[in-house]
Image (cartoon, rainbow, N blue to C red; front, side):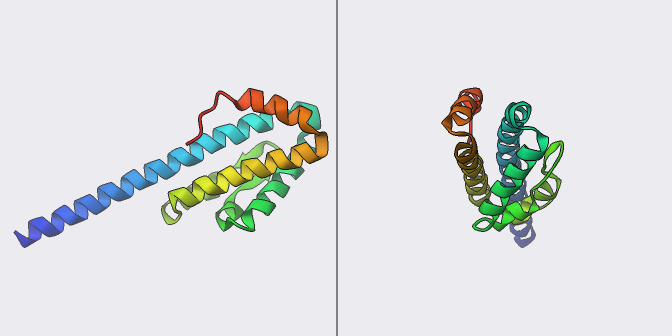
Length: 133
């Protein structure tokens, strides 16, 4: 009987860990989709080098408060989520969500300062249909 209880606790812990990993993965996937959409919409207007610089600056600003984003990188093709996805198990879901929310806010803030609200307003219309957690 003691073995059954120990086994049940291990099973519950394993299931809870798997559910947590799936939720974290979903958070990243949603924000990855949003960020890739923003990237795709502004590259034709601002160019790859400018957008990559803006995004890297937004990551740096955000990572100061949310170090998990130090694992998010940018190249000429866009964001690279490989490293951040590899560390899913060690990060809190709410921390991931807060990190990405602040990252998106920083991207929009930088864009507004550089281009005025015209580009940001258009982006908001473009991404309006995406649902965030």
